[in-house]
Image: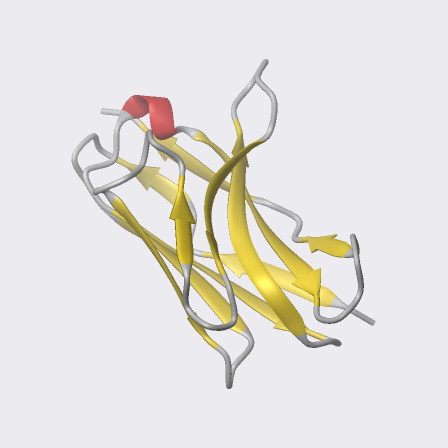
Length: 116
């Protein structure tokens, strides 16, 4: 059974930092990433990383967020710095099953709120 367990969300002031973690189990994954969904908006890609370490970021977070992964632990991280109120959203971990087309898994989501 595949599980993606996220942690690290919370309330932070503008300009602050948070680090999200997503521990995956039950399979081997190729690309892993983070998406977010704000109220009234569609879910959007924040950042993604392949098993080889190649990364991709949304323009809105480039230079502020860093995605990384520990393949031995099947864990992906999102370091978020210089947070802005518009970063407020539920953040979801996503993982693609290695070797199988179009099979993706989602975590339950973790709330990130940026407010003074």
